[in-house]
Image (cartoon, rainbow over all chains, first blue to last red; front, side, top):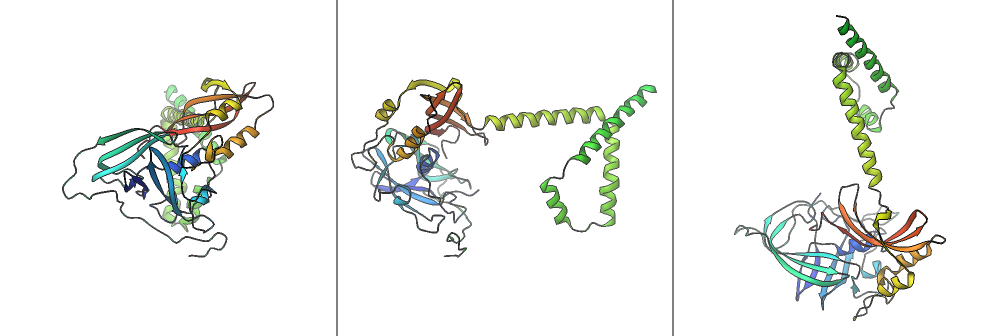
Length: 165
Length: 189
């Protein structure tokens, strides 16, 4: 396993790392998954979503990745007819936003810990609670912000052709 | 002295039973793969594999058969527990998970999604409307609609809190539809 590339969240006017995968919940609940192609050990899910909290609601506003067909993915690949914004009403749970310097690096999933976590609790896509969890104070030379270590990548492929793009 | 012979005799019978069982067991895929990867064996390796190891094993089984028998029974018990765990890890709604009877109309009213920015289809269950319509279409004859809530442990031992709807007819609780599926143990991931 490898530390995973985070999702992105536009939160209070800034783009920050989001260590939660709300789109996985959509697929788990039976939402149509077009099938993403993984091209890196740091991105097994095969896509990166950009999310936004606007008026206490969670929206998916962009999606990048490659489909198993070899085509580039966008919002309409998953939500036909919704090219700009999708309300994530299916999501009930906690969004984790890391802040500050890194306390401990874990080369698996979203396992690394940071000085603080902003935790947003959502019910049916609407923020119902916001809290900050303090995890400790990092060393002065610790890296700031979410980052991942090494990964293995490989080229994407067109389906049924075996061609490298 | 007779007790010793009796003990060793029982050990011999037990050892023969183990040998016959092993001889009749088909080779596993991984065993065949390792054998094909190993290539030609030296004479010494062949003697070790065909003579020394079986001889030492036989002596151990005959001499300490009660311990081997206890180990064997324990392994069988663990195997049975593992099979049960895997069967139970397949999700199904149980009668004790049912929380109340409802109707299609009630569900559609309470799950009608709206968004001020128009970022959702104005339909029951919004972007998941197709899941709902498929579920309604799968209704068995005379089935009643119920809500359910439960905790479920997957084969990978992750615990989930699950809510949803299920068709109930007689003692059959199926098919079901999930409306929430939250991992309890891996919340931070």
